[in-house]
Image (spheres, rainbow, N blue to C red):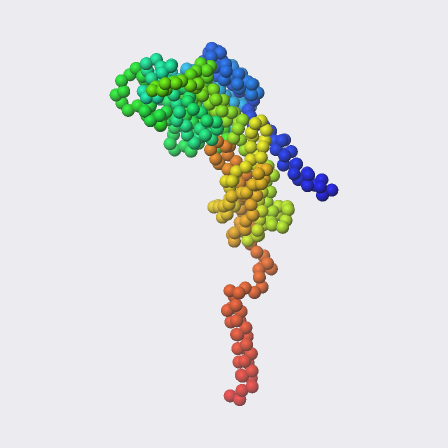
Length: 430
């Protein structure tokens, strides 16, 4: 019987992990300027279809276009490959796309130098500012000599960031880029540059003389960026629609000054970014939040100050199509009443089970267990449980406290003095 119970205890977390729903969105709406894009970008779309996504292709000006029906969204994600759309059809506009993100859904938006104001409004609503119409990212020192047309606007992007390593994961050598650059709102903590230009690049119309300071220069010119909202919605902005095209997927690049060419890493980059965007990696899920006093197994309705308490949680990561135990050495637990009174790191057993033991502070009130993990490339994890903490009852204090010995001595000395005084007063002749 004991062996059976132990087996259940081991298998239960695995069963819960398996029963948790997949976080990967299946219904994807693809907006196009025209259906020629479906052919020119077929490798990218076939990659999504091969991974189980149900793609619905529509023109951005389709009069029957709608993201929601009867108050419910009919799509889980949006691929916006229609940078020239001046006016959307149906019930879609820039605010509808932003509301789509606010609902926790994912969007991939690709633009080019002819980006319309309607598309620009979507980006602006997320803190992304594309350069003016007609501007391209130009780099006279890092352009691709194979595709160059004299404007030096086909650039070989190699500048990766911490976000690139966390989101893309795989090493990406050179990405062929031709399109418009953008800048990110410095005040936003939710935006990350995935691919930036070199120090020698700038954003400007190639055929015009540069009389004024360009829209952006150097590494502030972002080529591809990512946003993860606090509701775990994910958005990727690319200044190049061609970056996802068949032509760029199969292209070879040769940076100016180099003698040998190499295959562009556009396909690997696009595939890994899309995996992150569509929740195929970097998604966390928690189960079995538990807390109890040391020596107990069940949660208490009320805890007492200075009690030793154990907190545990099981965390899983969506990886390779299934929930797998998550391991990290920086999963944090806060024990909060207005401000954190206890802040500690949870230890794991390499099987997704995190636990810690600490002493409740000498403060009573409503406290919150807050296990949270906020790291680049992962979805936000926050498990909140509230418990009351009471002070000692009158009969739970120690009877004699060492620090009170002087008061005890004063009390008994007064009694003794009263007895001596009474005897002297009663039996003295004077």
